[in-house]
Length: 490
Image (cartoon, rainbow, N blue to C red; front, side, top):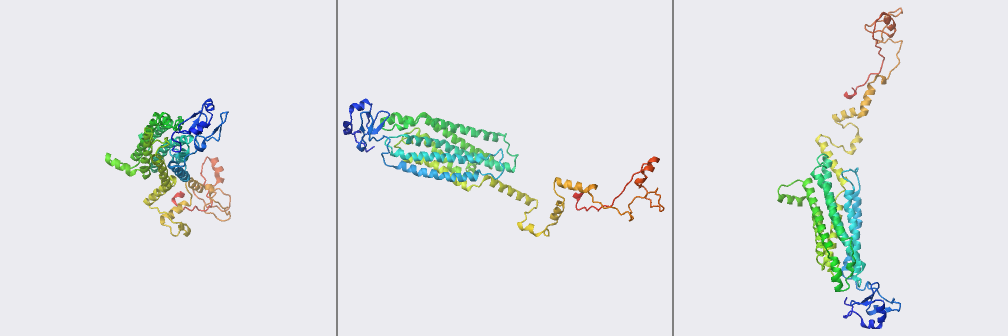
């Protein structure tokens, strides 16, 4: 406030005002160059000096929250970070469409929403980052702090649990993806009732319990104390206690616990889904070897963010609520880790394939490996266009058996073919001599037909019945002989 006179108030301006009127309407002039009665505040120096009317109203008055100062480093960096946060929204939507799309039927054990949560949280972080960063412009320019510094702090502290939740969902889903690949290869190798399954059931509940506790400790509160930075006395009495109270400290420790839970879950996934190493030293080496690169970068960055929020709850000098704080602390330890985490996740999302498509690729590779073990080779596309002259003996035999049909249709075709009722018949030539025709030994014709022992015609049933003789009759009709192509026809 270098533009304000050394004595704080322009005495000449006060002398021109009606002192009785000022006292009547309870106006008080302050050392920072403002005059206020608790409901109306105006600047009282240079060209901003107002004119007071007998009814207590001001003419040509300028509000105390007028953007008086020029844009400085804090506001400039706010514009830059707001631009970056805005750009991440486009890339986040692209990654959400890529990784959230389904190419396989959804399974109850592996929901599609699980792989989308990470990108939902990133959209939330980007929105909060834009609002918080852009508010820094008015924090720099306003003569007295108003709603701008409240919005900057409010949305910044919303970004902290949102960033932790984003990293948590990335770590949790990475472990779920490792489990899904093993489960797709062997569905019975990972039951959900063992210790591993129970741990993975309760860990998200525990993490979000601490993340929500952090939210309820920090965000739902009265933020108006941050506005009271018009003088050193007001800052010490109101603003500093409001920005460094016990709730901010408790929220910082709760955020640290949530971060530790994320690291433990990563170690849990590596322990169960990656090759194990014996001994503490080799287990530590295996932890860093199997951890994806993006987690090796985002977890330390999130720890920097958590430590900054915890340290700022003890130190007013680096606190984001301090209007005179060094922007290097605010953006270097607060906003920069969040933005870098988002950029790393965006790059990882573009590099990694869609999980369903990757699972389809793995299934195809396993199928090719199994076919090669039993001697099957996939024929090229031109193979079907050249007939069957290039088939092997085994392939010809398979084609012969496949002519009957397949599955239930095969059994149906065999049964219907073997039934006598389906056989085609032709009428008998009565004039031609049929060598298979039964002869009637009791015929009254002059020419006695040839008798075949053991065969009796239907005309003789009545005579035999009268004599108490029971005989069997077999009449064979002429039919087209059945063609047996393979053993399946039997």
